[in-house]
Image 1 (cartoon, each protein chain N blue to C red):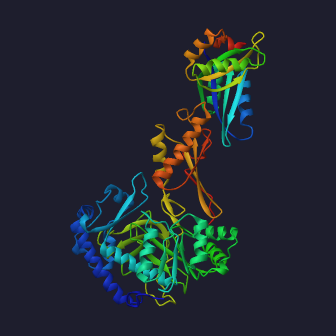
Image 2: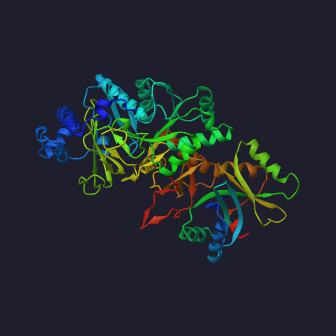
Image 3: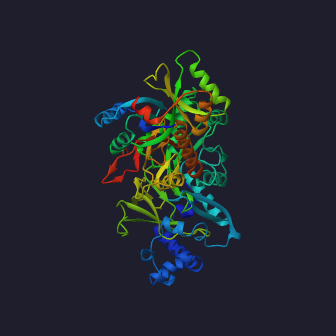
Length: 143
Length: 433
């Protein structure tokens, strides 16, 4: 029930993000979702793509530092309070969300959010108990 | 003022006789008391009796910082610990510092030489000395301090840092002599200006600056901004600390080496051959009066030349010119000696993989800054920004804790640090001195 995210280390310099998108474009990798966290000096680019192996190999070939992390893709009701409900469930279960970001594509009527959580197994279990849909990785990559 | 007319203006012939006698005594002592030197002599089929003239000194092998490290911490001491009254330490090339010791007589010798130095730089017993060299393991602060007391001047042990408070003290206490690193002196000048304090209204007459390389251009700037006469002082803890050599304020052209205590040589750093006066090479010292920590032909790694011409001040001791560089990769950051290998040790301790790093040194507002650029490899990388920031902080803290200098740590992408023929360029020094 987990999806794999790739993270790329980027210096805060003009054109670095474009360099990554160019490499992925040339490799035929489609970006499904992305988020950047940054400081004044550097940033971490997080990506959900349709072909992790190809993305990682092509970025490493170009000298980027890349890592893979397990995340959870969760369906969020597209209405006021939709995200709050999910965060409430996780909070009550004392599950800490390191960060999250939105997916471009909808899943049916619902929005999709990517959650970076330390204890994925517990999180998936508690969400499913509350009838929240967790989307399987393979489905996420090609949604 | 010449404090010790007898020794400082002694005719060369008499001086050389004393130097030879003291050298022989020192050689006897190190041979008997320090296994390192005895082994060195034996391996070269030398005995103390072979040293019969100053020329013979050349036959003795050099001593290097590595030798000091191999005998860490007290293996190079020539006396039992019960007669050692002081221990100082400076940066080693790895994690371990270079340790030096002093007997009561050594502390007295050092104080006398520092008193001579302060006098040569313009100080008298009527003066108030504002001593902004750091106190502690570093020999700068305490060396100046003891010399000032020996001279009979009043010393303000203000040490480094707290710059605004220093300006207030300067205004209120009216010190007449400033002792500091030249870059810190310029920083003081700048902060004073920001605080609306003019050095024209302060009482400084002379400044004695050292512990880092500086230039004639910096001298002019300091003299102009601080309204004082600036002289250069030289020393290193392995030899005794500050007070090995001093410029006289009369000539301000080269530093008189106290030859009744230290024998200087200039060598070709590659061949080890002794070079004639005037030629530039590496400065080598032999101490001839020290008890606890004598050194024989110690390679300072400082590059300079010797000038035997008589000086207008009347001192007969030979002069060394300004130190123009190093034969190793040592950096001096705000008066603190830093070797890139020390930074590497800190980085290695935190990350098993071989670190790719570069030190970028700048001078901002007259203060040295050091930035450690570190390439982020897979072992260091995390998808969480806070982990990366914690890494940066931890490295900076460890550098401060181990080396005593502040550094900014900046993570950079792999392969962004310039490599020259495959070898990373470890240091970029942008300071214009």
